[in-house]
Structure formats: C-alpha cells, structure tokens
Amino acid sequence: MLTNGLIETEPLELEDIFISLESLPEPVINSGGTSATPIAIPDNPVLQVPDGFTVNVFADNVFPQNENPRWLGVTPTGDVLVTSLNFFNETNPQILLLRDTDGDGTADFSKIFADGENGLNAPFGMVFTEDFFYVGNTNSIVRYPYNIGDTEINGTGEKIADLPGGGGHFTRNLAISPDNRLFVSIGSDGNVTIEDLPRASVQVMNLDGSDRETFAFGLRNPVGLDFNPITGQLFTTVNERDFLGDDLVPDYFTGLEQDEFYGWPYVYLSPDFPDPFITIDNPNFVPETQTPDFVAETQTPNVLFQAHSVPLGLQFYDGETFPEEYQNGAFVAFRGGFNRQEPTGSKIVFVPFDENGNATGAYQDFLTGFLDVSEDRATTWGNPVGLQVLPDGSLLFTDQQHNRIYRIQFPENETIEGTNDNDNFQSGEGDDQLFGRGGSDRLTGNGGDDTVNGGVGRDTLNGDRGDDTVNGGPDEDKLFGKSGNDLLIGRPGNDILLGGEGDDTLEGGIGRDRLNGGPGNDQITGGGSIDRFIFNTNREFQTEDVGIDAVTDFSQTQGDIILLDQ
View: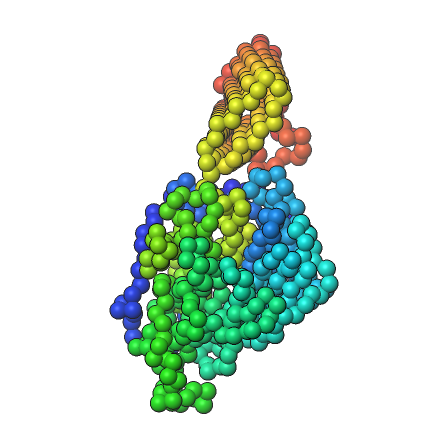
C-alpha cells in the first residue's frame, strides 16, 4: 500500500500571475469545453517545483478500488486523516488515519479512523477541539467525543447542524476560528440558479451548533477555508460558474467579512458584470428589475484565478521549513475542470501576502507537471485536491486521480557526527554529511545527495534516495547505494557493496570485497585482493536488472569471480 518514492523534479521559476477585472472578455454563452484525458502515471514522472523543494509519495493506493482520497486533516498528535470519495456509490465512506512512524516522510501505518458505521455520509471537512472531533457530512455536521491520542472514533456522534445535502456541489468544509466559532462552507446545487440560503454561502455557529447565521453569501461553491495567521480573517476558495467562455468566470480566492455578498447568481466579481443567463426567458430567474438590493454591494475578490481551474484545497503556510517568502502566504490546489477548450488546473499555486497580512492580488505556479497540453489531446496524470501543512513543516496534497498522497518539503542540509560508540543515525532530506567515527555504526542518508562516512568499525551505510557518496572506512563494512546514481567506496576491509538502482560506481578498495552493481549501467572496480563481481539476483532473470556494466579490473589470476544472472 505505501511507498517512499522520491519524484524527480525540475526547477520552476516563480512568476506573478495577475488577472484584473479590466482584462476580462465579454461573455459568450457556450455548451462547455473539454477536460484533460486521465493517463497512467509515467514510468519516470517529473514535476516542476521551485529550486530546493522535494516531492515524494507519502502514501500510495490509499483506498480500495473506485475510492479516491479527497480532503486532509491532522490530529492534535500529528497523525494524518484523509477522507474517501466514491463518485459512483457512497456505500462505505471512510476516514483513514495515516502515520509516519519512523520520520522518513512516508506513511507506514494506517487504520480506519471512522466509517459508515459511525454515521458518515460523504465526509469532507474535519476539525478538532480539545474534547471533540467534527465532521462535515454532505447533509449535517456531527461531532464525536475525542481524547488526545485516539486512533478511532466510537459511536455515531452528536448531530449539531442539519445541512442541505447532495446536489451539484455536495462537499461541506469546516474551520474553527481563533475565537472558537465554527464555520461551514455550502455550495450551490446548480450552475446559475436562484436558491435559498444556506446554499452558496458560508455559515457560522457556536461549537455546539447554536446561534447559527449566514456569514457571507453569493459564493457559488466555496470549498477551501482557512484563517490568515496574521490578521485572523477567514479566507476561502470559490469555484465560479460555467458556460460563459474559456476565460469566464475566473475562480477566486478571497477574505470574507460578516454579511458580505459575492454576486452569485446575479452578477460576477462586481456589480458591473451581470450574468447573461439572467436575461434568458427562464422561469428560474427573476427579471433584472427585481434584482435584490444587495447585488449593488457585490464584493470584488482579493485574487482572481484562471477560469475553470477549480481551486479546492487551501492552506496558509505556518510551518518552519519553507523559505521566508512562503511564511504566512497561502497554497491552493487546482484540480482542473471541464469548461475550457484548452484544459487548465492539475497544479498547486502559491498566493503571496505582504508583511501586513494582505494578499498582493497575484498568484504563482508552485507545483506543475501533471497536465500536458502540448499534444492534440491534453492529458493529466494527477489532480490535486486536498492540502495539509504538517507539524514537520511539509505540505501534503491528495491526488484523487491515482489514489495517492504526495509530500512537498524544503529539506535542510545537515552535518551529523557520531561518537566512538555504536551509533544509529538517519539524516533528513537535504544534502547531508554523516560521519560514523568509531564503533559499528548504522548510518542512513535518507533523501538528498548525501555523503556517508563510516569511520572505524564494522559499519552499515545507506545512501538511500539521491545521488550519494558512501565511504566505508578501514573495517568490514556494508555499503548500500539504494536509488540514485551513487559512488560507493569500500576502502580497506572485506566489504559488501550494493549499488542499488541507478548508474553507480563501485570501488571495493583493498580487501576481499563483494560488489553488486544492481540495476542500471554501473562501473565496478574490485581493488586489491580476491573480489566477487555479482550479477546474480538469486532469482529468475529479471529484465529490469539489465544494464551495461563495466568491470575495470577483473583478474582471474588474482582469484576474482564473476557471477552472472541465471
């Protein structure tokens, strides 16, 4: 189920994208566009992120077939929660708990936290207080007794609010304000239809469901909810209407205030842009002369996104590992929609804020590479939906297309020095240096391009992910390159060198060494004494083991041995 695969990345330059009201085209009523064709994950996937960031698979095959990971949460103890979604049959809704027990950036423990027996009904938003766990079902808000450290929910909980269920926009997100008020986002049922509240609004209430009222409305489909860490203001991501052209109507990101109106369905983005559907002879609409007075007070959002991006997940960054320019800014996940001739979305963007906690009005691509529009038919191998900042500063996002959760981190470079005892060290994900010194040590480089030095003693050295340099030291050492193009140097001693995946260079040094390049095109140098060059996996021949390997110093007279694949 779970894997720790590091995704290859390319550097992405940050550029401000700014969409103004003045740049908007005239509306053109159309019947829609197309969505990108889903494809399998490439054999060698590549994503683009700003320089210094890494991306790895946090969890794979998260749910059973036809289930999709959608929304994310985190428990008070740092466990990850993810909700399931089955577009075809919501018969067994689940919230899964995932845990990274060894701190390597991947989940290695999973457990059902809650399911249909707990009364879940298309669960989405999740929040905690000291004593309760809250879930936003499509038709209700339910809270369950919770104690710190619980790994599952018992019972069917207490329903504290009824909500309009289902419809075209059926997810219900939750957020708790700094002053302990509970907010819930509720989307419209249709594209452009006059609907009664609480549809197309954000509602607010006490934590027990009492004193409920409309906080902001005219929001076609508000999904993401989070509070600005500087100002405390509530922000949301909104999916705007379809069928008015490729570049209308821009989706948006905005801060909300009490009783504000945002236009839907009468106008969009300001009082100056009436929706042309209002003028169509349709019994669902009122004549323009009957437009409510509050439409004249329609608010203009803080940041406009490219139309039909489908912004969903929203997280202000309050971690400690990303560079300073990301502190207190917001990340937004674009799933991508269907209503454009050239699809867009399938990425994560960053919304910068100034030192006073105000949005600059622009946004920047932060993670791209899932969507390919270079061919006649656009394709995508990922659709980001949910976002969650973890206590270690990393950022998770769900991919509902391929049942995955990815992790983004900005790793620091470390220098770790052991003692003369038997040390067990594991570095982080940066380009690290590990020194074992004396003793029989176990050193693991983890992610990044690491240098692992064993020192005196019988050491076990793991380069792990990245292009690593592993130095064995003078005694009998075990060196593992694992993934990446690695350099393994045995030095004196009878060493075992395993290159692992990648195009590796193995140098046995003085001593009776066993050298196995593994998959990839490797260069192997045995060094002095009697060496074994191993090309035998102790199993039937596997095509993935094929590589063009160069043995630089084989000597039969010296007693070297070559073992080939079966």
